[in-house]
Each structure stands twice: as structure tokens, then as C-alpha cells.
Image 1 (cartoon, rainbow, N blue to C red):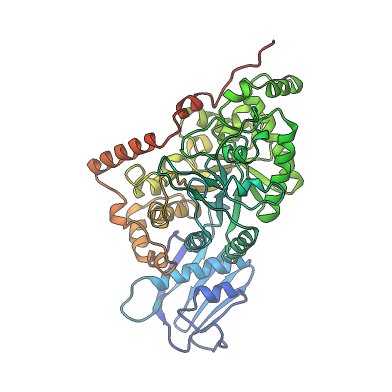
Image 2 (tube, rainbow, N blue to C red):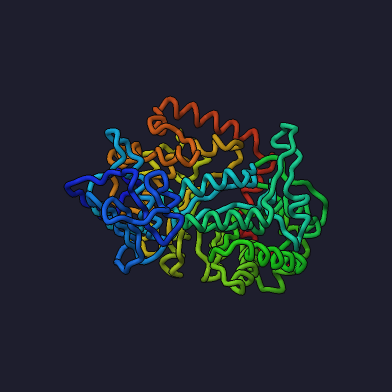
Length: 519
């Protein structure tokens, strides 16, 4: 059956349903009718024969789709299931046929493996407007993703209109250039645009998770409000990439007041139950030399600067808890050994230290994990790094997470960071069709059959074209070894040229276990 992600159960039957001018679609959900409007007449009454009928019914699945010769029915206990059933039907209808628009008789009983199936889009390093984000929402919903994680704040730009701290978007949304190109780059989403995107996503049963990265990756925030840094010195929005040392002061109450204002306002803009606080790649050099940070550590009885980050993070989490939000943080937030128990952790670092700490968080703390391992889920890296086959074959429930039955895994997420992705075309080519492989790992049972996956994928990629989304041809997604070698080398050289000159030094201080001096 040509569906991606592969359904939980499916069964082929005798017969075929053929669409005609009289085919009618009946659904309590307008979004379903819009999704299938090319195949039927949603405004017409449903006739006894040749109709598609959606209804809410208690079944032990996300949805049940049944295709007979004269009728198609989709039943589900929730509206989300009706939409997923319509997505499956659209994929089946989009597959090439013998000239007529039809579908073979079948029954599909379907349900997801994981509750969280997400994609991250970084709009800070390069900004993408509302129209591009809508296309992404359309595309991921067609593969049953249910979360879009927007990375909205970083060293190279702040991307939201904020009334409580207006300089964040008035100054922090524009950088003078990008890696010496001499061209200003900027952009932000107005509150009206955020409302529009949230509504557009919810119609497609996608929730938007906002990320305000704290306390590192905050140079754009400091460019807008220098008094929130340790030194108070003026700076500019970052114009190159890598890891910047300028970050929020953890010893100033003025900073915590600003963070509370910001998180409260952003939480009001995004009704999603999750809120991402970042917490990754936090250099400690500035804190080590800051009297206010050192005094904060003495007052709180903290011994290491890693613990100071933990203290800062828990203050931000306390704000989100009051707002009824569940925080998500990158896995570095575990290194303080004091992360609030309510927080979910996004596991991205592919190194032993990270795996060991995540394993302990699962075993001893019962921590919920979102799997976003940079190898192979970071799609800013071209297919030469992570071919389609490696993305598909990666099992999210790795040994440190308890194997294939790991109940600690909340879900999966594939990020597209945009340091080296500046156009919509390149964005789509990097993400698709590899995102479909992540979708299958997030939805379907753990068993893998790459040949079968590619066969099904080739039949359904037409739905992306209908959404206005281009993609890398499947045959180019698994390049030969020599091509991979040259592409990887060129990518690495370009990345090094565009990185902050102090990035390596800053990286070395990220997981600082340096203790507070007794002086």
C-alpha cells in the first residue's frame, strides 16, 4: 500500500472505488474537505453511492479507513484522526494510476508510535517569511508530523514582535551583513502573522513550538538590551556563525525580570503546551569573570558554572510552569544535574558523554526524551553526510533509551539549521524527502524495510508538488562514496570560513566544571 508513513495495519480487498463527477465528500471537519477538494464535491449532499464519509466514532485507533466499490468511510475518535485518514486517502489518490482517478478496495487501521513527531526550522540564521512557513506546515502535515518547532532567537537575529521589550525586534531582528557579504539581513513575525500561522497550523493539526534560546545564543538580545549582559557593553547582532561568547548575565535580577516578561508574552502568542528554552552551547567564560555571577553562585551555594546555568534555567522553567507550559531543553541542560523534573529533553549530541547523561536521566529520573540526534537527523548537513537510507534506518529508541520499546521516548524531531541555507529552494531540498523517513520512524512500527519504503515514497511524493514544495530526487539522496567525500570536504571548509573566529575557544568552555573560587 503506497502510504508514508507506513500504516499500523492494512489489508487489500477486491474491487475499486472510482471518482466521478457525482462523488461527494461528507465531513464534520472543513479541513478534510479542503484537503480532498480536487477529488470530490464537498458542498454537495452525500448520495447513497459513490461518496466519501468521515465521522467521529470511538475506535481503538487514530483512524480507520475503509474503501469499498461504492463508498469510502473514515472513522476516528478525534478530529485529528479524521485529518490523518484524509492524508492517507490523499496519498493513495495521488499515486500514479492507469488514467482514471480511483483507489483499490482496502482497510487501513492506523495509529502513531510516538506522540511527538516534529520538525525544527531555524529562522534566525536566515529568515523565512509566512508563505514559506505555511508551505512547510502543509508539507509536514501530509506526512503526519504534528509539531513545528520554530527557533526564533539566536545570536544572528530575534524574530518576534514583542511589546514588552520592543528593542528585541526593532534592533535585534537585523544584522549588518552575513559572513562579510555586505548585505543587511533581517525580518520578524508580527503578532498578527504569528496568529495567522498558529491558526493555519492548527487547521492541519500541527502545533507550533516556540523556542527562545537561553541563556546562550543571545547576542541579538544583548544587541537590543546591552544592560542584560555581564559587562553592559554595546554590541551588534552576530554577523557570522559558530558559538558566540556574549550571553545573558546569570547574576542580575534585571535579566530574570526581562526573561519573565519575554516568556510570558511569547507564551501568549503560541497556545501550544510545549515551550522550548534552548539551553545548548552556553560558554562560561564571561560568567567566570563576572562579579555578579560569582556573587550569585555564593548566595545560592553553587560550586560550578554548570550549576549556575542550571539555576538560571530553573528560574525560567518556573515562569513557564506558572503559564501552564511544559518546557523542552537541549540535552546540555542535564549537565548541571539539577534540571527541573518537569522538563523534557531534546537529545541531539552524538557523543558518549551526552549518551551517558541521557541514559542516567531516563533510568534515574524518568525523563521524557525527544530524539534529534545530529547524525542523522540534522538536515542542514547535505545527503553526503546523512543519506536517505541512513536517516530511514536510524532507530530512535537507541540502547541508552531502552531499546525499541523505550517508553521514555516522547518522539522524534528533525532540525534544519540555516547557517548555510538562505533560500526556500535549498531549504526544501535539504529537508525533503529525508523528512519522510523521520516521519515513518515517528509513526510506524520499528521494523525497517528500506526498499519497500523507497517504493512507497516514490508513489506519494506528488503530494509535495501539490503543496508547492520541491525536493531532492530520491536517486540523488544516496550519493556514491567519492561524491560524498568531496561534498563533505567542501561543506566543512565553507563552514569553517563562516564561523566566529573565537568559536573553538567558546566551545571548549561550554561544559565548564570549573569551581567558584573561595576568594
